[in-house]
Image 1 (cartoon, rainbow, N blue to C red):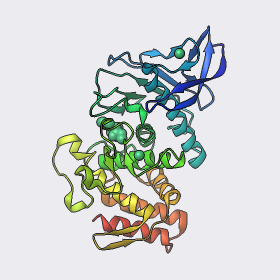
Image 2: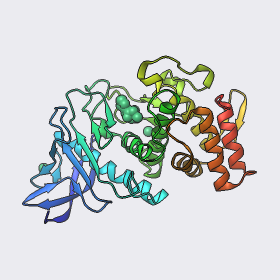
Image 3: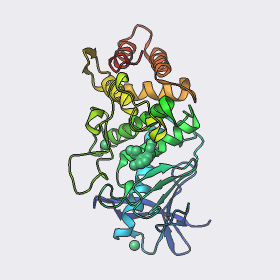
Image 4: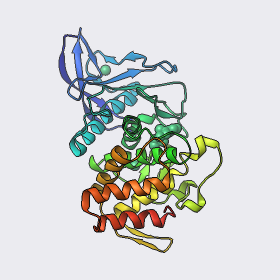
Length: 317
Ligand SMILES: CCC(=O)Oc1c(C)cccc1C(=O)O
Ligand SMILES: [Ca+2]
Ligand SMILES: [Ca+2]
Ligand SMILES: [Zn+2]
């Protein structure tokens, strides 16, 4: 369509002001960023479970209404996540071929969920108690877009151990995006949108998964069938290993020497995109992550030793 790249101003879910890359066409300003890959497009679900919904337009390029907040953050944070994968791993969108990033906000009614549908992101508004607009947290958008990266690479089956590994990869890179952008970063997931009436809590903690009742050791894994075999629960085991690999610590008597966030990201990115496959379980993930670290730093490197120790500390051998 003919038109021009413009810069709008918006108010995010937390009330913060941010610049948005928009597109002026036919007198309307679209939440359409043509500067990243094949584009970033944000849609209005109008509180129906219809996707993608209506391409988001605004009359004056000022996205400062209450109803705009969810769209502002979905659009802006998709750009931040695109930039992370491009700048850090030279990956052009989730398919490494510039695939369009499509988000729908105001999806459903009081919908306490966010997700990757297999072709786009969807964000509910939350019920205002458990969640506020779910696009308001950068780590959540990084989490959802990493599902797309995973589906385009390892394609980890979304159940049992491969599913928990899938979930952990999304938590790992959702968190690393937050650190890279220096967006009030932490090892918590969804803290900006979880229970708006309560401060200091989060959906999950990578540093201590037990704070949300999730396991931090393989011996405590969930073996039931709920949540596709506990994919959002057993992810805690891998999350803890990733946290320890980055930050170091002693866990169940095992000392892990931290390698830092950048190297932890490089190791898991290479493991996810080169060694993990659809059926990779935790033990196979240990092997693949060791191999990735070996490729990057050498078999007798401190980084390889830290990977071994991190997985050993959570009972994965
Ligand atoms: C941290 C992001 C996250 O976990 O999003 C989900 C929510 C809030 C509900 C159900 C599924 C997901 C998901 O993306 O796995
Ligand atoms: Ca406006
Ligand atoms: Ca966080
Ligand atoms: Zn997920």
